[in-house]
Length: 338
Image (cartoon, rainbow, N blue to C red; front, side):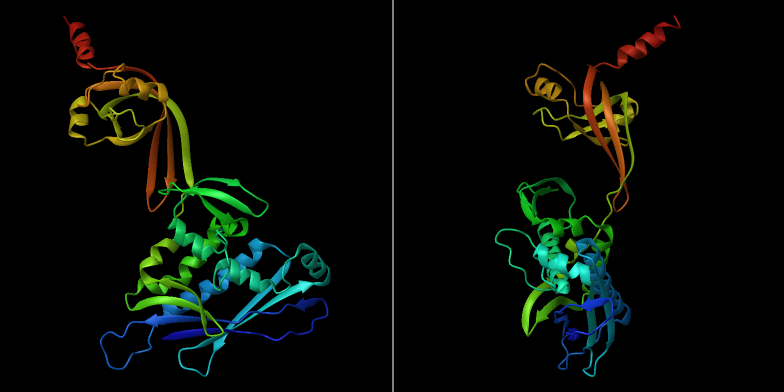
């Protein structure tokens, strides 16, 4: 096992700043035996360094997002115990901030709040998600679709691929939506990409607080969904796939000619938001073909964003008309030459 231990640091005096009471916890990297009689307590130096740096940066970023006026100092040094590391953490307050913190009800040991919000130590929830680690586990790292406040300190959110709402602490939500916090959490669990590393466990006073398993590592990956282009326009498309049940998904369009559309070499998925059109399709008031010969004229919205790669989403805002026989247009063109 690889252990890095975050050591409790005693209070020190400072002329302008005061240090808060700190929390001690241990990070344990569980390493697979590989079938040997003697377990080799080995981990790649770069993997370990990345993880430790991720822990340090994540705590600093969380402290910044919490914004209670403290300055966090984190230092890592070696231990006499093989495979262990001592991390000294200090949180400093100015005198006027100390009074503000007391009045707001925060614990003066802000590091306890920071470590708790991140999830390195246990935090009771009562049906509310109170740690970043648990929120990532529940959302599986997916994009937040909607959010609304349901109290002074909590919000109700819906995420991609989940029909049930999640009630989450607003501080946790702030961290989840903070790009750097997510990136540093990803670095923290990065040793789990090594198949020899089974889990990363966080321990306080010998009691397990949180354990992240190797099979959960993808939940903590951060993929940017930054929108880089968004536009609306009117154009005509070929329908290469229709949803005759009147649902807004399951449709595919193409800009190509009908022969290309039938081969579906250039079509793309679209989401139709025109409820009147969808109802007409489901009730057979709108008769369209499903063979790449129907033409639809529509007002659309095109959004391009960065995910694992460039992704373009098409939404049909309003259907302006349909034609089911493009051959008549070809006939008109031929007649012009007669």
